[in-house]
Length: 493
Ligand code: BES
Ligand code: MN
Ligand code: ZN
Image: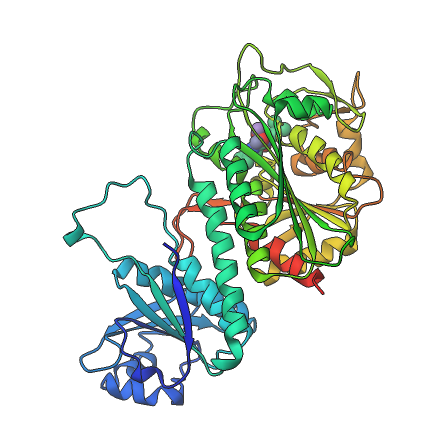
């Protein structure tokens, strides 16, 4: 169930709530406006700050239980010392939402200094993100022992009246990211290409968007031999999913958001080791990002045209699967030598990128869990960002930062292009041992429609977390929903 978030003004000490989260900066100063709350708590809150039991650092929290009327509990959460207030509030509110959900309170409130406009958006998004959980497959304990899910949150703002639109934006971002994380977390036997297509249709119905789904027979007609090669080993119908959001001027060139939607990547005949193979259900995270972004964009009614394009299948070994050494012709006429069937994402995206040409996009951003090499290069803290247009790349990097999903550029020099020159065809689907993330991107570049600025996001390290971190639990992160939305927002009228 979605978290219902509302706004109110006034003194936080007067809010009767089972839990009030209070964001405080580091620096040891207890804000004077909280004096009534501190008084209701017998001075315990200011004392915690004075004694440095709570320092206000990023990701820090301290729970204090009250005795009187007003909030039954206060959770102090650190805002740190960052100058990026939007990011700091997002993070603190996420931690607050997560703790609130874990405590088993049905309602909570959130306060931080001077919340208005953008920072109200940050608070709402953070609370929503923090409260996210996935328990579809856990047998529930008897109702009387069941922790109550967090259902309602109140943001206490300095400017509650003027921040309604910001609240709605924060909620939209939260819902978009939830949608993506849920799709990511669903197992491969449930979240199939067909399931992604149904989800796209459902989003389309709710927001009146045009959704087109192509299956194997259509892909044949479209001469997408590269995409079809990946789908050759699976009995499931591969899907090319197109979602058109038209919030901008009629005829204005859309932004194309492209996602890799491998619902499971076994590696195919070049099969992966068993250890960790289950993580390859997350190989549809780019697709989840596209759908989550479109959900948020449609909720926000952004005045811009966006087309989402998803290539979805599974990569399986079988008697009908593609083999190393096979040569295929992609829909743009280029011939590809398939030397490793585990480099399948680029084969799928090749035809999807080529297909995007018919929308005459103003810009293309693709997101894909494309290379293990990207995890080696950047770990789990940054998305690899590559491009054919450095000014678009700067724009996307800024959007990524704003959305709290940092990216980092990697070079696309000609030297690297040599590594994927084909022996008997135009291009090979793997380079050498080095620079695997870059050679994958250079492969994709061959299929980007001529003259269209394009950015590639390698989210292999950022789409899911194998560690249970303070703010983001183990599992799907929803990256790159925020990056996509912040970029599109920046382009909206
Ligand atoms: N989906 C994987 C990349 C991946 C690896 C994502 C680890 C997340 C975590 C991709 O299809 C793949 O298998 N890439 C190969 C490419 C290689 C064969 C050139 C890889 O990274 O090993
Ligand atoms: Mn693979
Ligand atoms: Zn893959």
